[in-house]
Amino acid sequence: MNTDSLIRLGCAPVLMAASVQVLVRVVPRPLGEAPGGIPGALASEWRRPRPLTVLVCSLTAAFAGWQLARPELLDQLARHADTWSSGRWWQFGTQLLVQDPWWQTPINLIALLLVGPTVERLFGPGRWLLLYLGGAAAGEAVARFWQPDGAGNSIAVLGLLGGLFGWVLRRFPGPALVARTMAALGVAAGAVLALVRDIHGPALLAGVVLGVLAAPRRPVADRHRPAVG
Image (cartoon, rainbow, N blue to C red; front, side, top):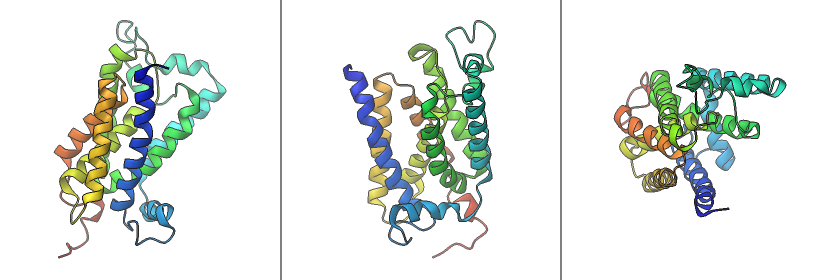
């Protein structure tokens, strides 16, 4: 295992810890207010339906099941070094629906179910889709040089996560030192991944930029409620 691989492995727990610590502070019932600790805080995000998250997660899971039954689907829908030159440009989109390797499927779906609802509440469905596809586009742009063959929606999920980090760094109200520190740590991990030519780094950083630029002043799902203070 070379140095770059070790760095990638080291960035994974950093991103996981930063994500959880940010999420439990921006959910409707943050850590300390929700019974059940971290699980209770994360579960509070599902008090209201998040239809776009559920739709994308269900579609991805359905294709994962199809891929498991028909392994040849991966070759048909994944991106390849000759995807553009062969005219199969649509593989840049369909590669988000299949997973390579397949065992990453539950990891990606769980990450989507954790991050997606919060981003949908904060940004609304339109901006959610912008972050999801923006992260995927950034990852695929560098994948042409760094990882021509592959598939999976992890780069799209990291676009959502980057958007969440961007929202926290720009909009999170009140005394939020821990949340902003964790968000900054997550951004730093994304930068390190980009430096070692991991496609997930640019995906996350693109989400951060889009999140900062598109961050609404108030959570979209809460705009019908009167402002407090």
